[in-house]
Amino acid sequence: MNIQSYLVIAIRLIALVILVFAARTLFWYFYQPGISTQGIDNSLLFTGLVLVGFGLVCWFLPQSIAYYISKPVAKTPVKAIDATSLLRILVIFLGFYFVVSSLVSLVRLILQLYFFPEYLEFDSINQIKLSVIYLGFQIVVGLFLVFKNYWITQSLVKINAPEKVDQD
Image (cartoon, rainbow, N blue to C red; front, top):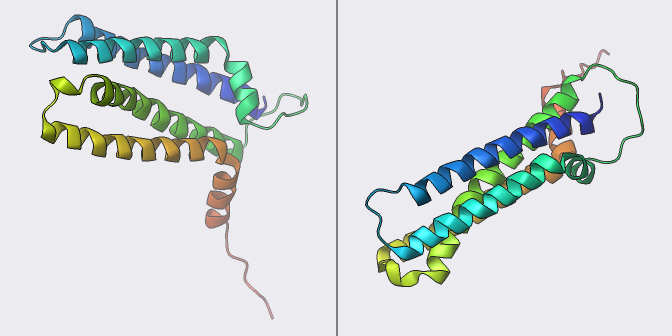
């Protein structure tokens, strides 16, 4: 199997993670105890629906996403995966996880901050702004891991390579 086949499997796993996040968010929307502000309710609903859409895209279009992430590979015979390819898949999976987990919170916080500020206090507005900056940075790191996976993997392999000893 080539790297794209493994990426398809990883993207399907990410789709499951996204759909679990969506179920959790929609659960909070329908069964939230003690929250009475309409703005927070609407942001939870919108976040849950965005996650469901993103999860379904990842579930039904994994081939297209894998083709976009990794360079196209010619039809190669099926062979066992080597350690470098497995490390690339792990780096891509970590990057996707950072992006997905941050995106869930980021969408909810942006909706609360910009569309429903009347339900927030001044201190919580400042805290939300700082959280948005942090989550944006986490998304950038996740995207860097996804799109620069080959470079990161090669760097990690070079660090672990044995040193060459000069024999004079």
